[in-house]
Image (cartoon, rainbow, N blue to C red; front, side, top):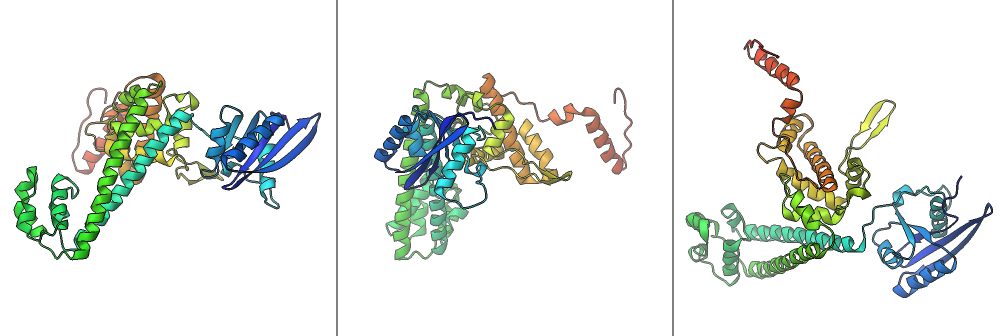
Length: 412
């Protein structure tokens, strides 16, 4: 088998140590040297120096959890690095050791049998960290809101039955009043603001409960955490916006393009761009980016039978954003995505239809970013227009079942 990299290295990465195999092919003979290094910065720099002494210019490593990141950050720019999916490097049968794994990685890489994972540059990785941290904090805030609701139910307070947002301006004023010891429902309900004041009679009944001292203590701490998270989320929003504005890449242009899609808000557009970037040349086609995001249909066939169409595992952060966008797009009136969702939901179910809409949104994003054009909606009647004869035939059949005979005229 042809050797693509005569002098290369394979690295098996772990939390506390890395095992490195340097593989040199010369005159048909293979020489292997193996060493272990720690994972502190000093030890990893020693590893880089050792590889340079051996004349290694390219190497491959596994994408093991987050343990590959320190090594990748130090080696980036010094070596040609291929980060491979561990699932794609199943070792040969036999004894499994770190040394064997490193040798196997080096051998596969030397013969060009490894496929590189998509690793964006340092700037985009920083944006990813910001958007992912924000997503995590939003999830934490939602969990705290649920705990507050559970605590209020335990105290016989039915505030959520009247106020649509317990943690809104009016809701927080009422919660603080309860924390401070106010038990009179009339006094607490009078803190309502805006349109909620129209519901004061209902609020008085909802706020009549049995609040014990431990309820107030727990509620105070939960509300403090929510306020702290709100501040952190606001700070991250500013940091994300500033990072994209200061970047030399057209992130702001990309945001402007993506927000022309129904169901795509500015925040979601920034989160997606932080993951996929603005340069679509790194994905050969829309099929590649769909598979990478885990939003394309699976393909499992044997003996002429389709065994499964489950979506593949991909970038969970992009997939989560796309599903949220698809849910919003499916409710956009008189739009192509709403028509697509309605058409599919009847046949394959709501969840699968949402995934299909998410896939269509990602395909649209790919071509919009690649060609620099805004979104043009195909219209809610697209599926009727694309095959008008089939639509006419279907409607005539439905009318016939109702006992109505419709004569067709003209081209029909």
